[in-house]
Picture (cartoon, helix red, strand yellow):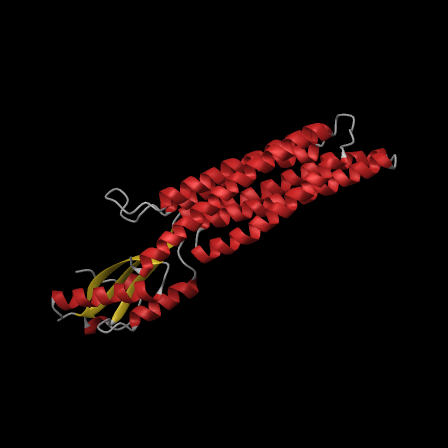
Length: 316
């Protein structure tokens, strides 16, 4: 088996394994927080459980998205299925927003009821969740960046949001416990306040993730630096007399490039083909995230001058 094929298989296995780990962890934490939240009478922990419940659905979406994104290109999807990862990331974002808004509503309602002191076990449960999620977050964000996977990165951000929400829950629970033991009734409201903070964090993270995901789904172009590097490389290919236009856009975890180059107007069709092939080969070899390059060849005429620009395309 070729080295590239082995690397791809390893990547697939790592992505799949991490997605399944996330699903398992979220199921365990959702059940733990939910049960302890009910028994310990903690609104903050129940709010955190709702967040983790959304994570279960989100992790499943990431896992499905990764599986779909790995499908090879076909007649109906010539550019592959890479956007499935961004669709999965978008679904995670929507779930976060819905869960956050639901908890906002539930937390506000608690201020109109007599406060109830939670048991200390709720605090220990929140601390355990913080440790577990932080470890998984650090590992998954490193893996996502190494593999260039937006779905895994979205899942990692979801883990980090759980860390923040559990921190807020732990703080609120602790203050409420202290208030109960020191007979300071106002501190009992710290538990529902923490639930509200958790909800606002969830809503903010969901909004940010949705914004990033929707931008990627709209075929966002690469930043100026990356496009400039590509442009410079194409200019150096023998036979390319001018770069008329270069457009590079994200397509899931990889990049698709459309480039128009001008070559000697007197060159044969075969010579133009070889130049176009050289452009594509150079791009694929120098940029690991480039999955496809479409090269259009135009005739370069001395009378046209040498100014570069997409609006100077001279299609024959």
